[in-house]
Structures are given as structure tokens and as C-alpha cells.
Length: 311
Image 1 (spheres, rainbow, N blue to C red):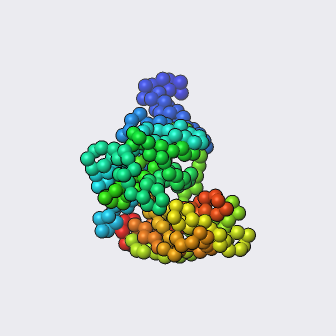
Image 2 (cartoon, rainbow, N blue to C red; image 1 turned 120 degrees about the vertical axis):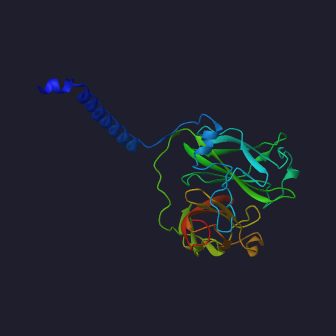
Image 3 (cartoon, helix red, strand yellow; image 1 turned 135 degrees about the vertical axis):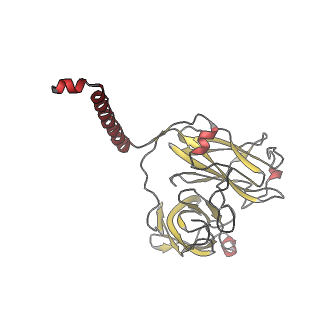
């Protein structure tokens, strides 16, 4: 039988087709690795919620005491966070709107529904799930109960955290996902500990270690040109605000400095915090501080040791 006759047999033709298909698939994988992933707009809100790898309203990431860390759920204790849309355009100053509803199912549509915490009734944190693009903004509440603001968004899946205290209710951080279609650039994951950060000529050094499930003392010291910065200005009632996000699920912790850091109209160079992250694991920390009339954000990577809580 000739080689041509063997190739004409049905089984051989099918096998040859399969080999060819595998070759095309391998080429496609190579192209995907070269150009990076593309995020498409979800077809439904349910699909948008699934981008984070967990159900939005199911408790996740409990510590050993059964406590659910902040930001992992869209609804908690009867309160719910809803975005006007599960998708958004990319670019600068993209409109973002959200509502908070209470245990009765009605939207909290007046300022009386929120307590003032550090000069604001609602703090909004927006960060991409790869822990880039961190933004801490303060929306305005409209007559219809919608909080609105503008944020800068690049393609990818973003986590939106609403940090607030309900009037005569609990202090909560609710979180939900927002999808921005487009090609996502390669980003390095949280790596080795990075305890120094430079931004706009300011250098910030972090001293201290995190212990999962336990109170940890951290000191952040601000210098410029090698000299201590002693003219930090109050921002939202304090000389610094620290947010910690756990790699993977983005469990959320917002920490304010010790009481002495609230006194006077000038502070620094050191800002002291006590933080209690929910578990061992790797965290990215974001420090907001104000100097020269401008709010800047310093970024750190830190591993939390210990085995308390959920890892």
C-alpha cells in the first residue's frame, strides 16, 4: 500500500486532522502568551461577579473565629452595595455610580443614613485585582441616593470597596467587581517584601512586621532628600491612612494612625499604626499622606506570618 493510499484511509485522515488542530492550538497559546489576556465585557451581572473567583454574597476567607474580613462580600448584615453597571469604559475620569441599600431593602438616600467617619460619610477604594491602580476617592451623594464620582480605569477586573458606617448601624466594607474590557498588560504579582517606597521625591520607609490574626505595630517614616519631613498635613482628620489588601481575594483592612497622629496641623516624620490583618499571607499596603497640599500614595509589599486565621 502506498503512502498516499494510507493517508486516504479514514482513521489516518482523522489522526492527521487532530495533529494539525493541536499545532494550531499550540500556536494560539504562544500568541496569547505574547500579547497577554483580553478582558471582554460580561454578558450579565452574574458573569461580572464571577470574575473574582467567588460568589459575591457567600462568606469567603473566614478566619478561625468565623469572622469574614472586610470587602469580600457585596451584602452583609442586611446592607448591600450595587453598582449602576457591572462594566465601565477605560480611560481617565470614568463616571462611577453606586447605591447602598439597608436591611429594609430601600436605598439609603440621605446623608442621615451614614455616620461621618474621618470627615466623610463614605470612603471608596477602587483597585484592580492585580493590586495596581489604587484610588481612594469620596463620591457625592445625590438626591436619588446614588453616590457618584470619577475614577481612572485601565482594562481588567477592578474591585470596588465601599467603606462606611451606617447611622445607628454597623461599620462595614462591602465589595463588588467592575469589569473594564480590553487587553490587560502583564503585571508582576506581589513579590518579596518591599518596605520602602518613593513617590514624587518623597521616600517612605515601613518598619514592623505583620502577624496574621494579631495586632501588629507599624511605623511609616517620611523623608525627602534624606531629611525628615515634619510638615505633613492632616488628610481626612489624620496624618495618614493605611489600606492593606490580601493577595488573591483582596481581603480589606483600613487602618487609621494612633491618636497622637491626629493632633496639630503639622506632623511627621513618623506615623504609627496598629494593624490586624485577618490571616497569614502576602499583602500590599497603600499609605495615603498629604504634603505640600497634595495627597500622595506610597505602596509596600509585606508578608504576614503566623497561623492565626485563614490562610
